[in-house]
Image 1 (cartoon, rainbow, N blue to C red):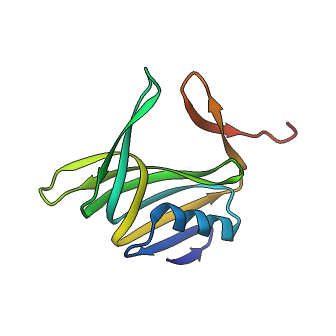
Image 2: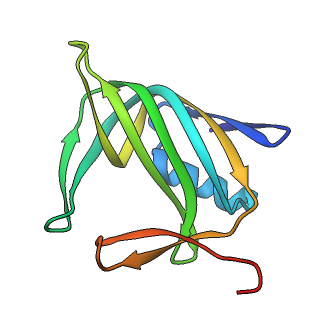
Image 3: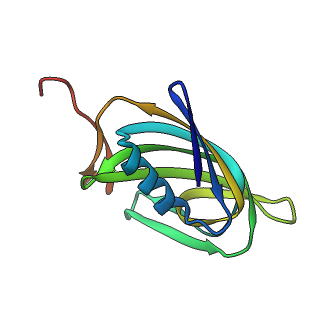
Length: 144
């Protein structure tokens, strides 16, 4: 991965066969990032996507092993259990020009992945929400 900081934004290029999540997590920890927003394009493979069912609080998961165009990647950085946590949703396109998407659990870079990351100064954590069944964003207010 290569990273370029320009003012308050970062431009990232992940390379073929890099693991998307571990690469991003290592980079965020190294740079001391607290939180932020990201978007990206490129090509991925070995993607595991999920669709969340609130009624029974579980994800249906499906693995897409083939290479796919990364049409849209949108997500955020927060902290979960004291470690950087990237929450990413994506839309992928296949060779038949069909689009599919969902919550991204894992992926490897097939060709390249180009990401624009905008850091925030806020300490944003994720905490369990029993009603929803997920770890939701928790905003810490100054003095609390």
